[in-house]
Image (cartoon, rainbow, N blue to C red):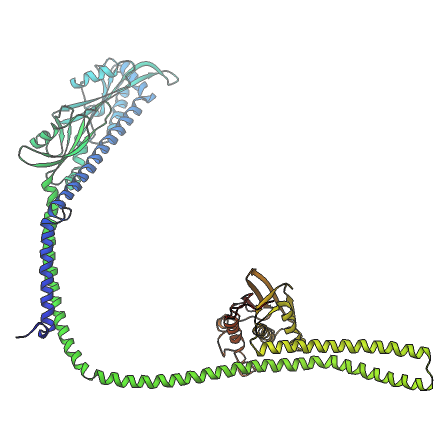
Length: 636
């Protein structure tokens, strides 16, 4: 019998996939039917009901805003038109003349009423002007109202009362609910100011069915096929119904659940066990505050989307599962083929690995030897660079010593000659004036000799200190300004020969507990670089050396020149070993590399360079006043 380990990879993967699918289905059904309520069927239904209530409330609010805005616009237009001085004069003129004598005035009034009605087509069921007696119709839009309607009489009489500028009433008739809006037309004097009298009444009956019919598509999308928007009065009587005018028994039942003036949303169950989502909204239409708007939606219609989505998701899940199974079978076949290829490749892989390992070991040994040779070569080059710099310094100091020693030798020979002359004068007898002249000459010669010897001694002392510092990493406490002066003294011949100059601005009180030799070598290399490279095409340049304390523990030393500068492509490589623009012309490419290593490794500082071609170069050295050392600080 074969064990699990003997089964092929393809069979094991198929078994694992089947196990995962079955476990996933079982877990999904358990979670769907008995799991977390929010994720189960009941939870999803509750969430959908809440969403349906929200959408019903949104539609009810939209319809209420539409009605209120529509009525406010018409009411504002009627008020503005009725208070027009031209209309007041025209109505009085028509009212005081018979129809036969004032045909033109009557026709003008009819045209103006027709124009007002055409501004909002479908809204006005009737629009006319009643005389101040409250009985006679002076004119109507298109002459379509011959007599005063009985349901309008009370409103007209009420509007004719003094102080009653307008009146609004709710009407219900065979054509559906409407709003009767009446505006008093005041009498005006010559200055167009109200006299207190009444010229007539503007009567407008506005039908409410037009707005409900116009929003039929929006109602259908928000409330579904069984949904409806209903207008009801305070007694719960249906005045308008978007599904059928006052003929839907279900909607009449809902309207009777209305509490006048209330606004709420709830789920109602009818006598036929039908669940409905109902939203009540109160309409504010002037004096008709007894009118309410009701949005009705069936819960079955709201949940229909979930059932449809679930069916679609089930179908999609089946398709995805079948597609995934096909891909998985294809992948397992490819895995089996790959496994066979891997087994075939593994046969010779170990031999190739051992061969490659031997090759890598040999290459590693060769690289190690090469690296060791390169390190020794680099060390020798750095030592040669230091010795070359020291040799140049020796030559410069020897040249510098030649002047004081020559002056001393000349003074000594002169003094010797004067001594021989005075010796001869003593033999023959010396005069007082000769003795005084001899003493004066000896004093002058002695002064020249002493000055020359002191100059030579200073040079030798400076050279000795600089040479010791640069040939050894001896740490000591030193004054920065004095050390820079000693370095410039040894570089004096080179600087004077180049016709350039070096200016130093370093406070005398700055002292360092550090390594003067590496610091001197850094300054020597930076000055020589400026003389050789920076002032290559400049007859007379200047190098400025400035130092200041950035804080109590650090010194900032800048070496700046006004030379030709460094190009942008070379600026990032100047500290690289063996990089030089004077290769084959005396440049080794190690000067700035040595500067960088001494600055960062020995002195424990940082160095940065900034240069603009044609505007010189500036090296900024930031170093601690006490160099890092395991042996501690050196006493001052």
